[in-house]
Image (cartoon, rainbow, N blue to C red):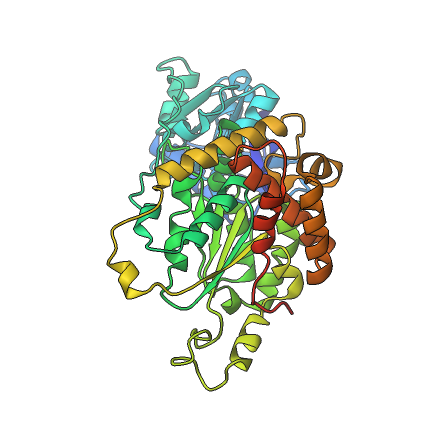
Length: 504
């Protein structure tokens, strides 16, 4: 008899079904595992054998063969331990084979039979729901997987609990979804003294998910402004929280029971590799741009990143997804993020200050900013210079709107955009609008059109730059509560592309 259990193998955020077949046949005693397993999967034999021994279950003196089907798909990870143990227990008729076949399972086995939480419980639950199966997983992963309400999730602490569940001795209760956690940050925009133009640009960026470049001398407040961006962004919607959490689940970043409604804020160091930023590595895992999906990617010291890393951002910024290509697989991850970049104007950092600048001015600034290519710079909707704050401003009391007040305006503008794009599956915010949809929603009035055409001709705007100005103008109009894009909205949008930064 061939017993079957089911699990999943991960390809990006997709969980593909894997059938675990077990046959116990006469012959020389052996325990073989086939079906392109990696090292972690191959070692499952010893973990399963020892875990069963701890339960006083001895393997028969026969040949045990485990096949992971489809056999031509690579299998990676320790989560195959539990389905292999289930298939073997069903083949030995210790648990009912029919019950096992109706379950999708994943989990790592400890030598004493306890189940260790594994990554990917959330996408595995999605796959189980599509196949109409119950998901069996370690207890530590149950609260995460239970957020998929379309299937029943059973969380078990040990393999012995699983046996008692299937034999009817002590059925396990369904897992409950963990409480949504919320990160409460005490960072408020009012803490930033001065920098009113930068605050306004931050609000526009948050409202329409427009990419923002900030250039300023050291200590002018670029990082301080970026750190307050999460405080003005609305919480993740239910669909956004689910798709974002699926990526974080694969990366092992979800804590027990927690799907977080707070938008991700990722800030990698400028020494990060291309695989760390874009995705890749031995298992072609998600990179920082995917971990920032539906949130913010803050890249401080932007010109200090390797040129190759910066250039790989160009396509994901446009498409909202990245394909990690390997010889044996092409893994696709979503990466619709808000990019906030910060840079000094030159290597020494004091290009605008003649008293502190180095002797290589202005060549110092030209050489430094030339590390950012023109095509990449053209993808920033908003570019602002952040001047140094005077000492007199630092002594002033907090001024301007608080993060809560700005967040209310951002939420109102985003609600308008969600209603606007309700019939467009591939568009959510103004930054996504393109083609006829962009012309329809962002067409300026006659005065605004004349201004835009004049500026486009004098500045030599590319077609991409022209459309990005339209998108920003539409967002400014939304923040203003205007149905039409007028000349003042276009003028403000254009002002964020008038910059002394040199494009190369």
